[in-house]
Length: 96
Image (tube, rainbow, N blue to C red):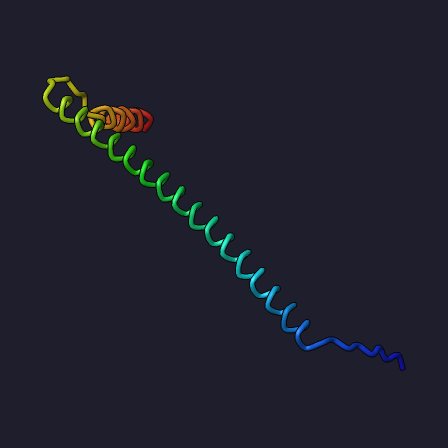
């Protein structure tokens, strides 16, 4: 059986543990700062995108209001569909 005798002074062990603990705290703090900064950037980007969407919707509403005011003749689509269905009925009647 292989036995390795390892003797470490208690003060050295406590020192190594403390250094490792504080190093971990520093690294975690840096990581959290980086994540918070990134979240802030993404929030600003989202706010800018939402503002742009609202501006586009406002422009759309203004254009729709302008179109409501103008008199443009509009041919309903249903009239074309009715004519097509009448033609189909005429053809089916003539085939009998």
